Amino acid sequence: MLIGAIIGIEREFSHKPAGFRTHLLVSLGSALFTLIPLQITTFQSHPEVLSRLIQGIATGIGFLGAGEIVRQSSGQSPNLEQSPPPRLEVRGLTSAAAIWVSAALGIAAGCGLWQLGLIGAVLTFIILNIFKRFES
Image (cartoon, rainbow, N blue to C red; front, side, top):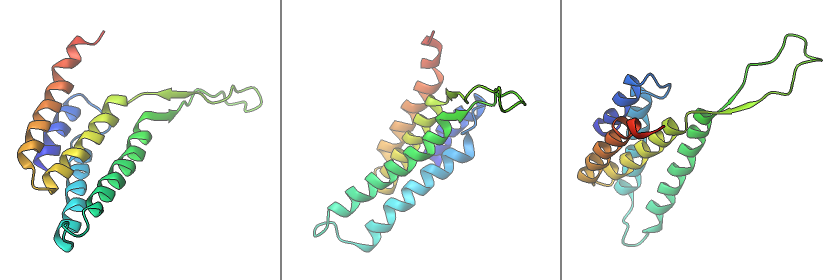
């Protein structure tokens, strides 16, 4: 949760929809999903179990990120006969990427790689906070 909080705080201060609680939950959920098979199976005989689990988390978080990215525009006129077809706006790519990274960091923590998770969280914080100044 600490790893997700590092990213979530930055997103919260930037007033993004996916903020502190979202990143905490994504990181915690990913860690828990990772810990479950580590506790109930031996990976010497079934190493593919963890691989499938990580693939499932990445896919599921992809759908969560897609919900952050694609939003239907509300620019329709009240007269439905004359209203143009709805436009799709692409926004929130960075927030979706931050959610995805939170999941990966949660997986790392769940696998016991908390040092890697903390390093990744600090690097993500730097990317979101400092590198933002270099964008046009």
